[in-house]
Image (cartoon, rainbow, N blue to C red):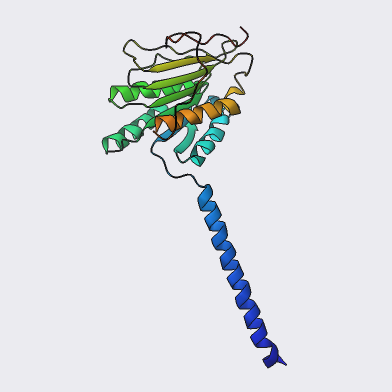
Length: 225
């Protein structure tokens, strides 16, 4: 009896193995189609106080990774050492676009980090901030900065430094978000990702909500007006 069924069992086993391999190949092919191609650039996202109140930065980093741009969320307290690391990479020949983002204290330190990079003559392609509390003036090495803020709480607009010649948009989000949820806003994440893709040369120009006037030094009109 065993001699009769052994060939059948071997045939069934071979068929199951073949189906498993084919299924794996199809799954791998489908996964490959959903993975975005690698794009140039590196996005550094700075969390705010205690490294726990800005988890929207982690969510945004994951979304940016999905479109093929490297992104990592870190504590705002690491901004100075991060500037040193970026400087070392730049001097070693890495010329990928540098993009900075942050929420609350993390948004303050994106500009501090940019100023330190400016001292080393290193350009910053883009800054996207979410409700900075006490931001410094934007240095001249920054090509573009988008600042979402809520002036009714801790948020502040950013101001250009004397030699700044880039694009600056202060976007007043009062009435829509508060300081503790603005970093998680899906609509603002979409605008940030579109700006990233444009900065790395992989996206078409995206219409960001305009300030009240086109002067880059003027804040957006309040949403309630």
